[in-house]
Amino acid sequence: MSTKSARPRWYAATLLIVMSTLGAGSLPATAETLLPALAPSQTPASPDPGGKQGSPLTDLNAYPKYTPADLEAAAAKERGARSAGPPPDKNTAEIVSREELSDGRVRVDFYTLAAEADPEKVADSLRKSGRKNVEVLRPEPQPSTDGEVQPMGPGDCTYGQAHAFTCPNVWWTNLGRRNPVVLFNDHSGATWPTTNAVYKWNQTPNIDSWYTWNNCNQAGVHCVGVWSANYGATGWIGHTNLIWASTKPGQIRDADVQLNDYYTGTYFTRNNVVTHELGHVLGLGHNDYWNDVMYYSANTREDIGGENPALLAQIYSIDRE
Ligand SMILES: [Zn+2]
Image (cartoon, rainbow, N blue to C red; front, top):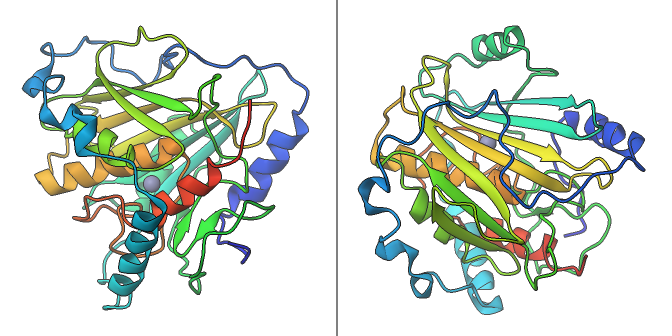
């Protein structure tokens, strides 16, 4: 974990922005604080669509945490699969924007493109809509940093082909708990397998992903709204909005996810997209392996891979707050 990582080009600039705001106050977000421009104004079409709350997928026993041996085996399996073939020839890109807010916090937005979308056109459209510092991200495969997961150190935000946003401070706060808890407050329609995605990520050690339907009443947890609606022909099928704290570079304080019903996709695509967006919420950037769920473009991969959970387990392994 000591090899230099591939970072988005905006990484350094964003870090500078964040570092320049050190000292500004920022309270932990313990309640869902939706950005007005993000959430659809309508209430969910039906209570608990598709019986999500009562789904057997909410049975945590079905998604136990990976043990160290599980993580090692999953990472080894991932490395084996990765060497199997070259990436397909397709348009691979994702859009990111960043903006320093008036209170010193930093807003970062990721947009997963719909299959037929032109990345440059989508980027232009987002610029016209007011998004700042919009960039088209494309994969830049790096030599793999295979090996043991090592203790956290400066610059460690990569494991194999998996990457985290910043080095090393990407995390939700613990809020006094053993693990930080992210409560995914689902408002999405029945076609989006949000429940499944939440609990897949909960297999990751050191951070807990919980599911709830349309309810953010639990105290002492971070609520992340997961929304779906017909947002129109935006060119993106999934969108994650993150708010980074002003006082701690890369520390995630708030997040929302939007899933665009305009692009229906297949069940596999929707499962891939929602799992991908939730991976961003937990702190993952993009994975350079073309068949990974955190790759730059949607694919049919539905599981969380081997190196993503290993990296998350590492970046959430250090004690804080
Ligand atoms: Zn993404």
